[in-house]
Length: 322
Image 1 (cartoon, rainbow, N blue to C red):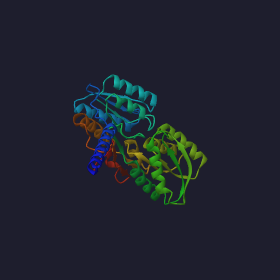
Image 2: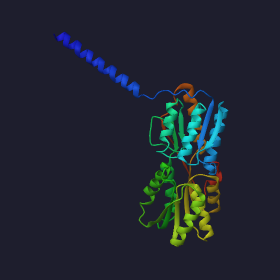
Image 3: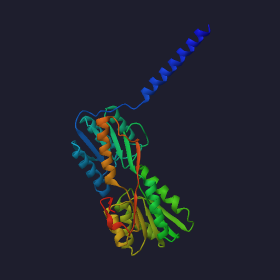
Image 4: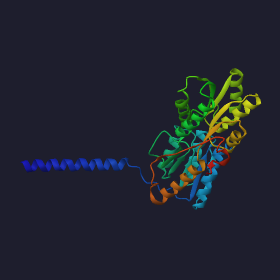
């Protein structure tokens, strides 16, 4: 009797273990082998922004060097256009898709479509709000970079005065991450007064017009924090046109921002290693196609460098020489 009970218990344990193993196998990510062609799609925002232009060119050059046919296209920050480009990549039986996406939520469905069609996607520069469907999400450490440049801002402001903020698109997680990091530093100083927050959508012309309006409303404005360099460069131009000297910081590390720092019209920026991240994205896609693994966790952060008058001359095309 005791033996039969033990056997029954053992059988139940084995059955439970087998069920757990099969359930785990069902939940485990499947290996994606590509659509069948040798085409690597590079999908980014508009190349009118030098940051996106450079990352696309580096990704394309890396893919070409690795032996892929490259199709380089832009979604122009339109989720609808991005979905169409993913469908085109699927129709072309792309080996892989490398994407700087058009929205953390809006991109999820497109990446799932690629996944369901056996095509691996590597996201770079911007994340999506889901894990397990892209093989890698490689982004600059926006939090670390924005905090670093905010510390420079506080020092330049001498811990007091009115300032404004230019914010990126609400659909981009980087906009909120950078703003949060800015304020974790700046809000510790009660004599620094935030008087206006305006959304300028990463755009230089909007950065100019928004700053122009802010300066008319707040003539005592002393500084401005910007979520990216495009908006910061526009703000610097607006301040100069108004005959004002503002303390301005940005994030990206573009050549335009470098030149503004060297001329004294901007104070600092946080350089995102765009070229390195683009290269990593393609190399990891290639490794995954060849081995079934990138050898890295899905989410990866690459640290930024703070750029000031002290090192701006060593910055070129998002690479800081030592």
